[in-house]
Length: 34
Image 1 (cartoon, rainbow, N blue to C red):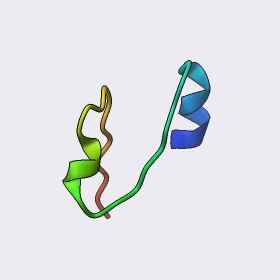
Image 2: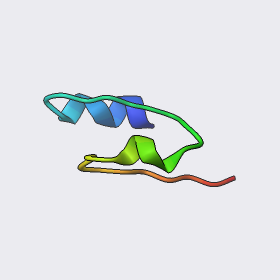
Image 3: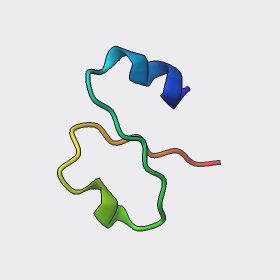
């Protein structure tokens, strides 16, 4: 789960969108399907 894993990061921001432009300057990107 993304929110449980975010506890291990100093700063986090979880964003959901249909536009890949929101991933600009991201250090980690998780893409799921299904």
